[in-house]
Amino acid sequence: LVLVDAVSSLGGVRIPAPKTLPPYLLALATGVLEKLLLHKRSVTDALTGLASREHFLATLTQEIDLIQHCLHATSGGRSDPDLQCYSACLGVILLDLDRFQRINERYGYQMGDRIVSEVGRAIAGACPRHVTAARLHNDTFGLLIPDASPKACNELAEAVRQAVAGLVFQDEVTGDRIQVSASLGYVNYPQSLRGHQFQRS
Image 1: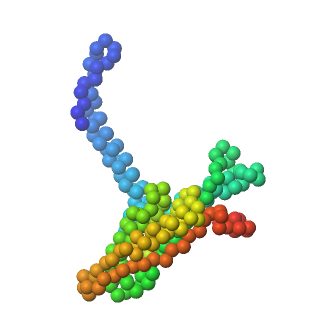
Image 2: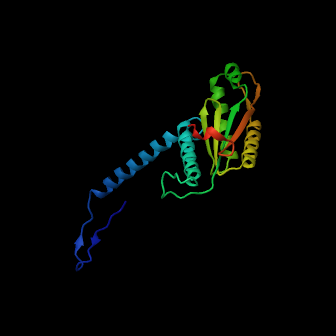
Image 3: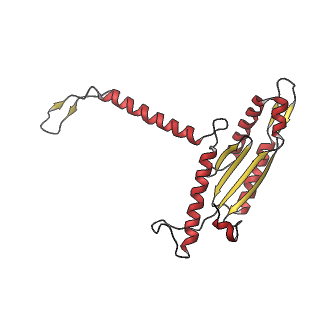
């Protein structure tokens, strides 16, 4: 960083640039980058690079609250009159790897971690940018699709299933080829809920 003497607008008076500014800017930039890194780590699953379970649940809760707010608007019970309403829904897809515990037991947890990591990459590659994809637990993943119809959820679930089914791994010790598959299901909110289900958390 090169600083030159500043020229004041008052009659050409020359004011020397402060000597403490470069170290201060460096410390400020370092602090900002460290804060960004901490935030990234707090919302990201370290093994897959997908969103963390906590971030997924927080995003899901926020989306449901917005939809609930708009649903109550018709009955005059809006929680925040200044908040804009829109016709909205969301889709949630859950994915679980089939017989994954057997893979861990036979080939070891290091191979299991490698498979989970690659599955995470395959999921991220199959999802559009507006989808929140997360690792929820061990070999269970979740996808949150804003404003999604049942058809859109079904199509994305099938695309993700095919992406995962296309992965093939080889165990270096046994030479075995390992292919994984996944079971998926989806639900739409609020279309899939009826009656008293709306009152539940």
